[in-house]
Amino acid sequence: MFNTEYTNAWIDRYLRNELTAEDEARFENALLESRQLQDDLESALAVRRLLRLEARSQEAQEDPSAAGVRFPWFTMALCASLVLAVLSGVMYWNVNHEVADLRSGVDDLGKPHAHALIVPLDIMRSAGQDLPEAIIHKPDDGTFVTLDIELSVAAVAANIIFVSFRDERGAELVAWHPGAIENGRVRASFDAKHLPEGRVWLEVTDTNDRVLDRRLLEFR
Amino acid sequence: VQEAVNHDQYLVERIVAGDTGAEAELVTRFSRGIGLMLLKHTDDPQLARDLSQDTFVIALRKLRAGDLRNRNCLGAFIRQTAINLSIQYFRKQRRFIHSADGIIQLQVAPKDRTEEKLDRRITRAMLEDILEQLTMPRDRELLRRFYLHDEDKDSICEQLNLSAQHFDRVLHRAKQRMRELIEQQKGLRSLLFGGLLDV
Image (cartoon, rainbow over all chains, first blue to last red; front, side):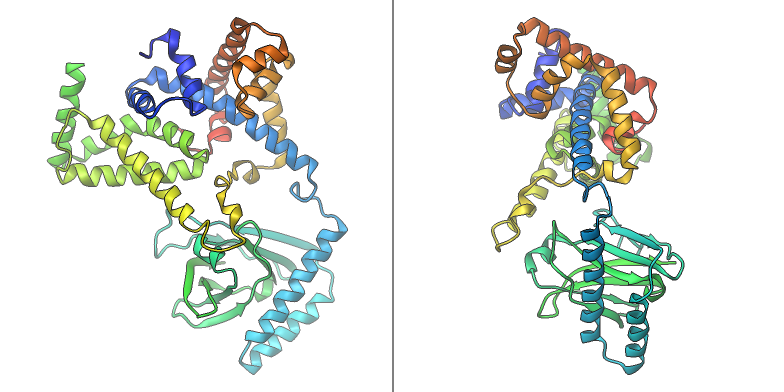
């Protein structure tokens, strides 16, 4: 079935989902046994992925926000989310001395931040239970750190969520109600000096305090 | 064929007997094919890699327990394990789609962030460079229509005023050239497949 004459046609039909279920199974069983077929499929997949990545890269260049260009509205949105994050934090801050820390954080808002850092926290599907999913090297004080958190499907479905950092014993360090969920992600901004230290749990809960997502992070 | 069947039976017997070398041999033998197959089904190298790892964990667990009755069908068994896992993954994703408003965007395929992890400008320059080496500018339109927009061959030939033979030649040449580029440029495979097929 898969001699050279027909291979290319079969591969293209396979990639375009044009094979019947039976033929697809026959093709894939042959694929597992044939190095030549694997090479040919890899070449076709590579051409397809090259075109896709190039098209996406072109789209990103045309879309300034995706390309990371800082336009005034972007800076304003970033500042607004910071203010919202801090204000939300106030609502969940219970102890007086923590309020003092927060005041100092709010004071910092008035100062210009020379550096801004966005840290994507993607879900690691294969991460172990007791190993940190991400190790975040804290930048110098004065740097503005935005955590861009990918949410689990359950968290996205919950719609209204709370996010918190907890120490390894489970004690709450800080909690906040994030802004809008966009593309399954939420953002929160911190001055680097207000980020926790060591291993902490990032916990996402719903309005009934049910844990929807729990991930171990390490700040160094 | 008989030799291959005997080899499969022997490989399974060694795995049942606890031979870790046989387990490594099984993974080495099937991982590239399974990776390619899962990439086709998921269009996401990271997800394909995760599912591929899970496939071998589950398959080896079953093989060790002697759960494969027909030892002549080792390849088909590994394939079916991978297919079941990817079906399970997408079914789990779908379960949430209609459960509430506002999460319709979950229906889109998992986003591939490969290009985001690299500097955009460098990535873009590399991609353009490879594309230039791959095919003549006049043939790129054909490749884009066929591979990117999934248009069918007949309509592309008609609109671009090409013969079917010319169409086949362009595709064949592009794939052949890609093969050469993958062999020559060490980082190209990683750039395109996010480490899924790194050897």
